[in-house]
Image (cartoon, rainbow, N blue to C red; front, side):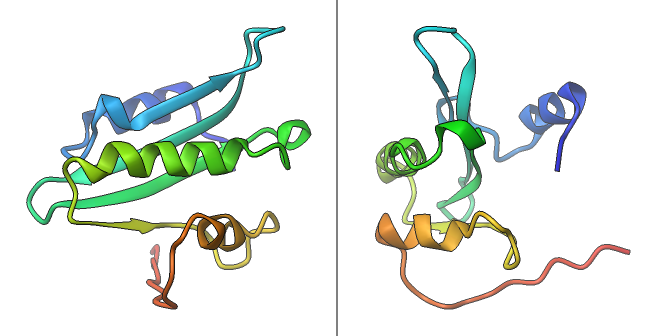
Length: 115
């Protein structure tokens, strides 16, 4: 799913936005962003939430997703009591495999219903 620049920028207005929890990985030869990790932090309940871990298709299987997740968790460790992840159950990239390889456990599923 593609989002417009304005939509993504609007996420910075959310109460849970933390500039330190947005990470871009650039290809050094092209200076193009090839991976992005976004986490939120809810200070009321001290929850870190990994919301957006994306790696361009041609850059996958090189450890970039793992680097994003572990780096975000390291940053969250200083402030959050726990961390959650989000992803689509039927996503063809199988994000659960990435999260499990980074140490996430459990089988809780939350459903988001849109009208």
